[in-house]
Length: 423
Image (cartoon, rainbow, N blue to C red):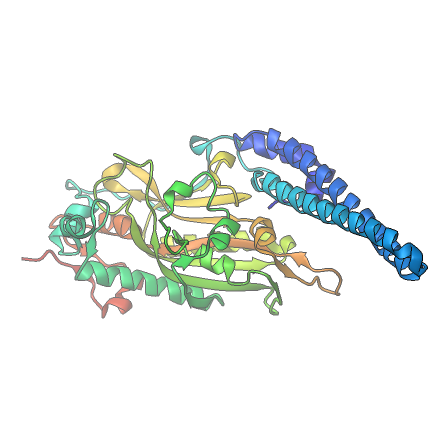
């Protein structure tokens, strides 16, 4: 939810944000009208309730022969108060529904437009070249006995797979390496639930335009998460948090993730680029709102450190407003070069959600020096996920189908330096 004060004091800024996202600014006018109705209904209810309280004292002091008539008036007034309270509650719900239609206000400088309107901030590393015809990650994975798509489809359907042998070891090594980096940067490791309640999923902003991407268990009314961000955002729901001396609360959530990939028919059908199930290590951070942009830069720096240390060429893009999702005020994607596609493909992203999620989930803190509690800011960023195997296998392949293990991963693979094709 956006800051209601911003909606009242600078509705034009909120409208411009909606326009930059490609969304209708009419939602802003609707929310303003709903707030006016809410205030009017609340005032009417409070005035009637005050009248009821005063009248109650009159009844109590009235002579016995007058009380019968006064009691009848009191009952009528009580019904009016009850009706006014119901109207106030309905107006409050209508206001909340209206303001929830407004996406987070984008940070100044975020490019306007849709998916194709991103701005490239930088490209890092040398694009790999080969003196042989490079194999794609699936062919390499099959040669190495690392990926089995056929049996994944047999067991679970399209876009499922088995990682086995060195493939399973490589993913576990990658995740452990990422976890170690998170630990060195003061993140608390977390194994998170992968099923969450509707209010948590909605609170993080994932039940909006892309709700069809999420698996829903109707009988239990629970959602399978597509990122541990959801569970970690809900971790402090309805709480007043206390920040440590380091200034922020930092968690690294390791979980299996699920996405329906609705609308992706025919896209990335080969291999493990776009699948229904994968593992991910997600950084999640709570901080004071004024610290959010600086913390966002730190999350991006950690993602880039991971990519560079593993010898991957990549670019960083400033994602356009229309491709942010409802919760993010700014998002940076890091995209690694995939040789057989001749293109950069997203491996990680990091988002600054400002106070949007915290307002929906009621997560607050006390300002330094005391005073009224205020919403915190929330940020997230990916350190490793299954898709990284695509870039790692293709980038570090050799002519015979073997793959060099990046040096930082070797300690997590028992010292193995090269993945060799199986006989």
